[in-house]
Image 1: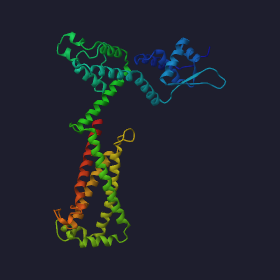
Image 2: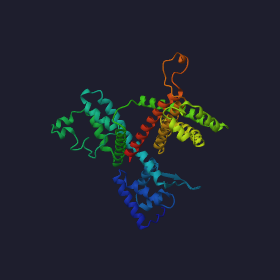
Image 3: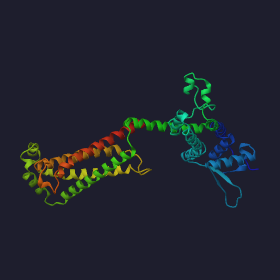
Image 4: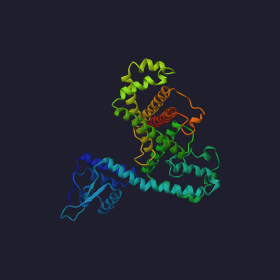
Length: 401
């Protein structure tokens, strides 16, 4: 027989305590003790070494090792020339917790959800059981939590029939097959499964709180996605237009002279609502104004493109469309870019004379509304859209804390 592994008193207490805690978690005491021993052992152990150290039957050791292998938290290795299997535990604590959580979900939570789906499907065919259908549907969606009492589905004070003093016969009026399956399943759940269901409930309640913070009105998901996609398309087109305009100014070797000539010959620079501002700010400082116009268009174009790509990214599922921490800042910058777009476009429209659109035969085969004027409401709409997105992201982040 193999020699026992020397364990100091603190390690022996840890192994014994881990076994006691295992029974509270729904795990066999011997399985938990073997796992603790393998975790603290300095090297992989054979089944004989485990048997000698813990002083348990060989059959019990073999059964427990198979159980731990089924959980996926121990590995089997074999030395060269040695026919004995050696066992070692995972060392990464978080990876071990992740594997255990996934296995508990597969063993305990997934069967619960499967039975709930079957029960809800049967109850939906029974018009007299609308209330039970609604409650089990809420439980299936994560809106309810299985109670701690294993003898019935509701708590002592939570059942509406008991709370209202109705006779006990009303509690047994539900279809027998459905109730029997749920009670049988509930009695077999361990504390770990109830903890998993509690986490589902907490996450669902958090999502409901986020939705309430964003707004109580209902929106059709498809129409919301279509509106955001259309807004991203408009943002992208205007972003490309402003980016190209800024790059064209940067590539113009006579840009400063052309800017001065444009301002000097524009009707709106001498008369109109912005003439005093042009004469007081732009005319005395043409270099600064030209620089602001050039780099302002470049910045607006880049921000609008980034905001459009970010909005489009969130339409995807999985990791690609996951929520990221920088989104509120991008949305706020997109709103500022939309206001800048409307301001620059409105200024150019007023500098050109600011003629409002009218019915004119000369516009029969051309645009009746100047392009700069059309960009003003588009810029304001982008700012509105991005401000709304910023507010929704901020509310959701605050509600999730």
